[in-house]
Length: 314
Image 1 (cartoon, helix red, strand yellow):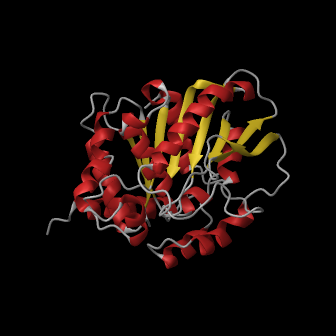
Image 2: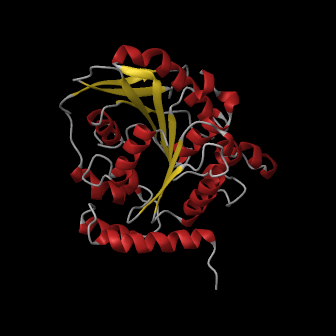
């Protein structure tokens, strides 16, 4: 019996995972607990696994600006992480958090290492890091997320040079709902406030790109609405297949299956571009949350790919 493409992707990931188990940078006890948890999205349990591996404040070697306003809305806030050794203009990594469209923040709690961990990794690896938050549904439905990112990219393009960043090398990275907002921004040029989108590349981790391919959850209805007739135009798949902005996408072996399906759809759609297929990575052993909570630990399988994507432009 032939397996559907998402199932084949999962099987391939399982084979890769077995190989990784012999040489994986993921601690064996964490790998076992993630496998036991399975294909669930469970931030509290995943935080408990990864918080002990992360740095605690104060963070040496980095200057931090918290809660900088980039737009008019109450949640139009960003944090900026600049290496104290900043010299020549550095590339800029913007991170957009998830939260199922109705929650989440650029820092999960005032003392949490998440998502400071991504900014610390960025600063250590030659970037100026920018952590962004945005308006939430149901008060701010489609296309509020993409509009907020447009405002943030414009603010960063105008101001990041003062902080050692290079406005010509801005990379926009999103996870989960944040990846959806990134993909919406990239794929709908009508939202751009900077010529060409203002990006050197976009990185989407476990996003949803075709709203017609999988049933929407209640929180997704809160953002995208309940009229299926609008879902095709509010999807990003077609626009991502046309964009000239370099793209990277990732998903996790233990993602819920809908995310793996969306990963496959996006991967194949981008191969129709004149510039060629997007860089695509299915992370062995990881879950929906561990793939980002593990950033700035010894597990560099995702971040090494990001660095190479920035270096090569593809």
